[in-house]
Image 1 (cartoon, rainbow, N blue to C red):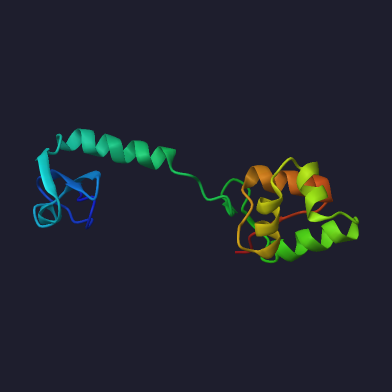
Image 2 (spheres, rainbow, N blue to C red):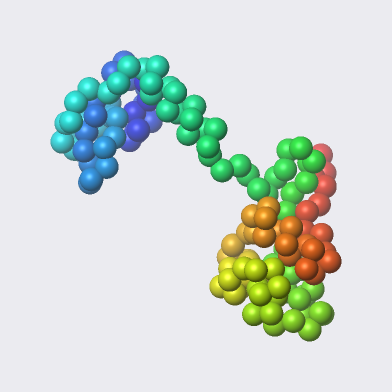
Length: 135
């Protein structure tokens, strides 16, 4: 079983309360919190880890099915396309039904667009934001 605090493998885990969070930790990490009880059997911990892995967000920047990645200069490409169409950031945000703050973060490069927003931007600006990954 794996300790949720240090990541070490342990034969058993204790359930402790650390800063308001209930964690399953190894005996050496248990000293940092208040013991609540023993951890459930290993099978339920593994099921929880499997569930967490299934529900984890996928990497939107590298698409395995097509071998495409988000272009390196996506922010500049979006800003230039928007300006060439004579749109303000507010107008583009309204056109794609997103907040202006989201668009501003994307155009500044502080945020990468997820697949949904990327597709909206590609349609609205008639640009491609994904490119084939060279091997």
